[in-house]
Length: 195
Image 1 (cartoon, helix red, strand yellow):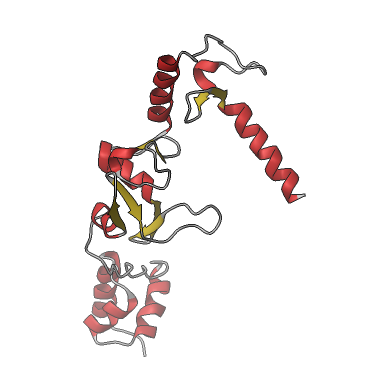
Image 2 (tube, rainbow, N blue to C red):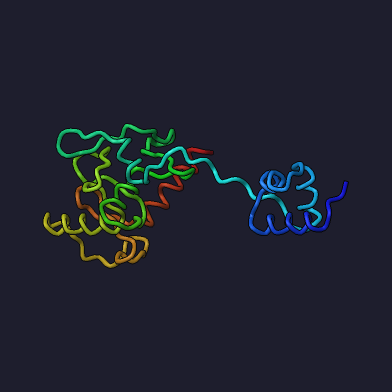
């Protein structure tokens, strides 16, 4: 049975306001299938999906803290889940996955990290905000260590010609290496293992 023109106009208004078929049907006292049929006829496209149910009212920083436990030396131990591949501390907040260290970095600095975030203290598993650094911070700290230890290098290019100002990285001991060459070697090693 077709709807009268006033109901069709009201239905179109509800669809314009973002109502779902169910909400429009309840408002107008019609069934959902009829509302869905008129949605198609009126050219409104598919009904919007309901927003995902958010089980937690915690902020991302508060949720991060719920998965940590203080340990000796001012470190924080991760008690939440980890990735299967390499054990990276992870958690989900509002249907998005985050690494624990990236949120720790955000807590410490108020900004998103640039590159990977690692613990720069004596506990490589630590997720304490004061103990993590992103790639530029890590490079700066390790370059300072190399200078203090007297192992800094004045080379402007690596053996393959990569500019060290852009590609130089440092290991935990302050020894320099080429980040691009290191990444290329890792890719080649993984490709060889997969073959």
